[in-house]
Amino acid sequence: MKERAVRLLRWSEKYTKTDMVYLAKGGFWVSIKRILGIIVGISLSIALANLLAPEEFGVYKFVLSLASIIAAFSLTGMSTAVMQAVAKGFEGAVSEGLRENLRWSVGMILLSLGGAGYYFLNENTVLGTSLLIIAATLPLIYSFDLYSPLLKGRKDFKRETFYSLPRLLLPPLFLIGTVFYTQNPIVLIAVYFVSQALVVVISYFIARHKEHINTEKPDTLAFSRHLSVMNILEILASNIDKILLFHYLGAAQLAIYALAIAPIRELRKLKSFFLTPAFPKLSNRSLAELKHSLPPRMLLLFLILLPFVGAYILAAPYIYQYIFPQYLDSIHFSQTLAVTLLFIPISILPQALTAHLKKRQLYILRTATPLARIVLITVLLPLYGIWGIVGAIFCVYVFNAVLTLMLFKRAV
Image 1 (cartoon, rainbow, N blue to C red):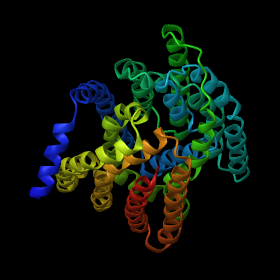
Image 2 (cartoon, helix red, strand yellow; image 1 turned 120 degrees about the horizontal axis):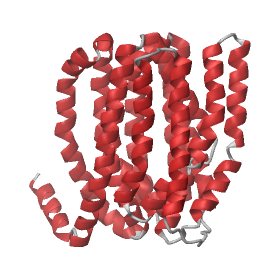
Image 3 (cartoon, rainbow, N blue to C red; image 1 turned 30 degrees about the vertical axis):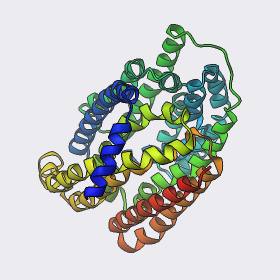
C-alpha cells in the first residue's frame, strides 16, 4: 500500500496545470449533462415501472432493444469518426458524415419493414406497428445527431451540453407526460421515437446555422465504416439478453431484469465524466506517453469507485422497497451487477486505441468480447434464467478487462 501511495503521489506531481484546468472545465459540463441524464433516466424508470403493468413495461423495453439492434446496421461509428476528425481541424466531416449516414440508413429501413411484416403475419400488431414507427424515425435520429461530436471535437463542452439538453430532456419528459394518460405501448413508443427524431433534426439545423464550420474534409471518415462494423457485434451483444429473455421467459421477467440493470446503467453513464473530455487529449498524445500516464489514473479511479459501489449494494434493498415496490425480485440481480461498475476505468483504454486508429486491436476487442457475451448468454439463460445472464455478464467483464489490457500493452 505504501508503494502504491508513493506512485500515486509521483503521478499527481506530474499532472500538469493545463490538464487540471482542461479536465475541470470539460468535466464540469460533461458531469452536468450526465447528472441531468441520470435524473431524467431514473424518473422515467420510476414512472414507467409504477404506472405500467410488468407485461407492458417488458414490451416497451423489448422494442427499444429491437431498435438498438436494427441501428447496429447503420454507420454507428460515424459520431466517433467525426469527433476525431474535428479534433484535428477537419470540420467538413460533419456534412460529409450526414450524407454518409443517410445513404447507410436504407439497411435500417429494410430491416424494420421486414420485422414489421413478420409480426403482422403472426398477428402481433403491437410489435408490427412499433417497427413501422422505428422505420420512419430511426434513420433521422442516427443521421442528424452530429452536432454533438462537432462540439466535442472542438473541446467546447459547455456549448455541447446546451445543444444536447433538448435531446436529453424532451423525449423522456414527453413520454412521462403521456404515460399518465395512456398505457398503450404503441402510443408510448410513437411518442418516444417521434419526439427524438424531431429534436435531433431541429438541433442539427440550429447548430449548422449558428456555428461557423470550416469545409476542410478529412481522409478518416472511412474509419467510421470500420468502427461501425466493429459495433455490430457489440450492439447485438448488448441487447441479446433482453431479446432472448423476452422470447424464453416473457415480458414480465424481462421487466424484472430491466429494472435490475436500470440503476447500474444510469450509474455507468458517469464514465462520460472523464471519457468525453479525455478523447481529444488522447488523440494528441502518443501511445507511449499514454501507456505511462493512464494506468495510475485508472487505479485512482478504481479506488474512488470502490466505496460508491459498496454503498449502492447496501442501499439497493431500500431503494427498491420504496421506489420499485413491484420489482423486489430485482434486488439481488442489481446488487450483483453493481460490481461490474468497478470495471469502468478499463473503458479509457479502448478510447485511446480509437483515438490512434488502432484498427487491428479494436477489431479483436470488439469481436471477441461481444462473441463471448452472446455465447455465454445463449448457453446460460435457458439453464439458469436471469441468474444465467448475470453470471455471463460478470464473466464477460473480466474477460474484456484482461483482453483490453493485453491489446493496449502490445499496441505500437
